[in-house]
Length: 163
Image (cartoon, rainbow, N blue to C red; front, side, top):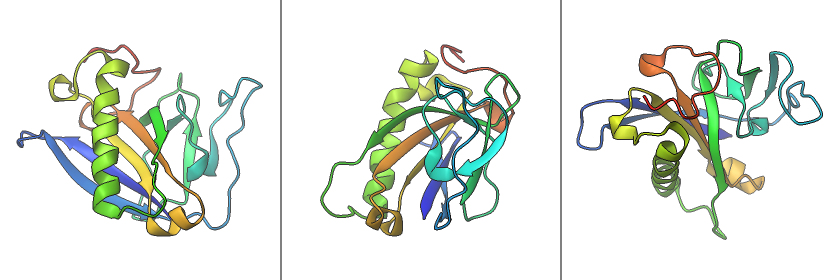
């Protein structure tokens, strides 16, 4: 399983509200079609674990995220992977701790990518993070994803967008 947590702009104290979607990927769909540099060359369905920093994807649907549509970033897309890191722990730290680490990491990486802090931005962020089940399969990765204001699709990268 892989968890996708969607963080939406709001006027709460932290400016964040979270909705979690779960998913599992027991049968791999493989990777996107990529060139030698690793850049996607055409829209293709891939295993959710294959999303890499720099990839652009369509918004996953439903509550189980098994596969994602990886889209060349110059085409219209919903989300862009802008940062990733592995959680360092011997045992699964629990969903609330993993969510906390994901939110803190993605929030701290946001300004460096976009050019303005999250609480000053009109853009949205979300992230994939490991679950108890994916942890057992050596999944430790948090993948931060950025999307357009109010869920609007974008074309091109949001790096340096300063909005």
